[in-house]
Length: 264
Image (cartoon, rainbow, N blue to C red; front, top):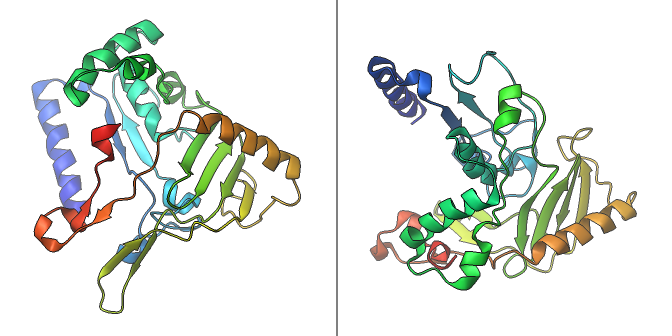
């Protein structure tokens, strides 16, 4: 799979070179989550795997390449970037004004294609995107447009949440998003985790990237402040929807049907 993907990206790069478009192209290559050790991945030294709130399940690497916009090669950018930042970052790359009016126009123009009729509520929310442009920070190879982000707010299924503010990360409840395992017959088993888990975990990721030292009981004021911030962000969150496990006849990948993209 990796070899095929590598070949596919190479074919695109070759075509851009031949057509003379490489100098006006930005490559963004990334993963959507940490690796799944059940299928040969390794997240060492980070803790956890895919479907978990540990850094090994959520942190991923990638690269951004452009001979036109990046003058320094081999730069390693370690600033805080969340997946939702790519939307405004790419708009910034393409020359869109970062002002709310331009962004709202772009957003409203896209909404009818995705959602059909646009309600007043959706119109009001349209300009309030979660992401921030990271374009200038990527070009500088330092800094970040954000100081915090949410890993998860699930008040409905797992009853868990996780947030990062600066160097600190707090996990409330079970760090697993779902219980992802294999039954004795080797079949994939996906089910919700126990929602009664009330554990509190606090880590300083700069000093403790492997999340080995829980500081929750040593820094109660930090936990209190991060809980308050989480509650503030919760007011704008949408309900999580756990995928429905269906029979083989339905023909969907892994027999999982998820409909939340229709309603958001």
